Picture (cartoon, rainbow, N blue to C red):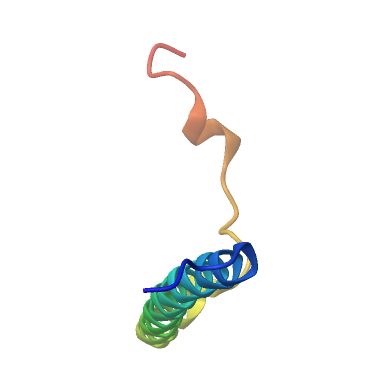
Length: 73
């Protein structure tokens, strides 16, 4: 069996690296898809919560500063 040349060795190493990178890219793509699905679900949940209590999304309610006083005053 003939000996592989340095160029063939380098080409083989590059092919192996590309294979690992493609696998990693596929895994990262699946992670991004899953995260987008989670974001979509959370967005739907926030919309549903806002529909249940439409006033909650508005400005915060006015507070009376006397309500914040400790009981001994």
